[in-house]
Image 1 (tube, protein in one colour):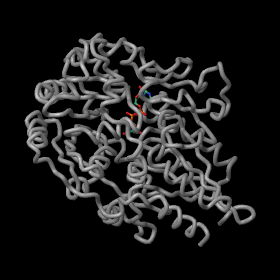
Image 2 (cartoon, protein in one colour; image 1 turned 60 degrees about the horizontal axis):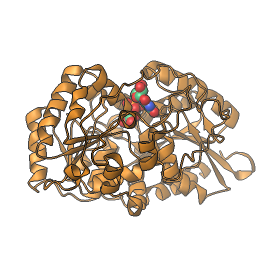
Image 3 (tube, helix red, strand yellow; image 1 turned 30 degrees about the vertical axis):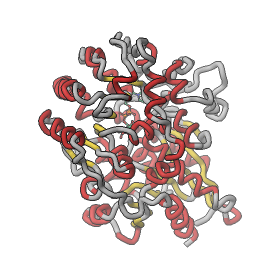
Length: 452
Ligand code: UD1
């Protein structure tokens, strides 16, 4: 039932990088329904590095969170439990009409679980995706969040079959489209050309510096300004994420005073050979974009080594630009594989901003990734994607899009890349309802449902 004076309050939850591009158009759509609907943004703080976090808020015009839980990193159990404990207080204070969660990260399931136990309605955006691989933490998060949800918005038709098979009533499910593609289509004009990012990162002869190799933002408990590189490529307007808006934080105290549960060990970045932008910008084959962060790919040193060896081989024909997730950097370092970066054909970058990544993918010959979101983004952009996973929860990117699953087998990876290089990579098409208006459909339906 709507709250006081006929108004409705929706608490929207974000926590990690892939949530931000999903929530941006939803919050915009909610603004069209103000003041009848009040949307409050809660950020759990699962991701906290500047480049994984504030940079996206700034670029995507997401308002600073109304409430920041500042949980930081930890084991799955500790992180999830910490989010739950802190989110319970939010629900007690805010008394919302519903909680809206997006995607499949730990913040998604943690907040859904708290809301369910408190009898608060739950709305899940990006429901029904299934990899059928329960060793993926996200698969557990998806299944359980969907079970708990009262309204489920899907991005592809197969999702309804998945939900039905798990006993979820089809009446709760709305095929609304893909909010991440809303953001992509709205942002294309602002994509930063790959040339700009590569030249900023690899001025000829200067190499990939020790500082630039670090993630851009501060660790919790310190107030370290973004590195010059990250600032120039991810924060052209300066650090505008309002520290003051993150409640309970006052400069010069730490940006996130909450204790991080498992501090990132300080990374002593590898010194690398100088990188020449021309290697990446003037190569006859173009360049590949690489991202890697799944535990299944980076946690086991033997698997990681096999992957990096394969990528080293590929880089001889196709130079690789590699924006690195902090956990991957740590894993490469701790596995003693840092010499991977010495290769002049591989340009390692800190995590880059959304507009930079959009430009980097758009201009690429092929994208090599284990990300879920990038499988969809490359499909929307019409760029071949070679997915370094055995399965995908986004099968429409295989059947209609540009995605090819190759797993971690070196031969299969090489074959996928060779196909893209020969110009025979999938061209695909943008799926139905990935039209830039998913968030509007979701919010219109949601308001009617809440009123109903
Ligand atoms: C999380 C999501 C994953 C998503 C990914 C996108 C879960 C289970 N996983 O994975 O689905 O694809 O985000 O990035 O929710 N770290 C930092 N700085 C940060 C954040 C993380 O250094 O801002 C490091 C920490 O060492 C941390 C590790 O990365 O322990 C992993 O972070 P975590 O949020 O647990 O999972 P991701 O791998 O980022």
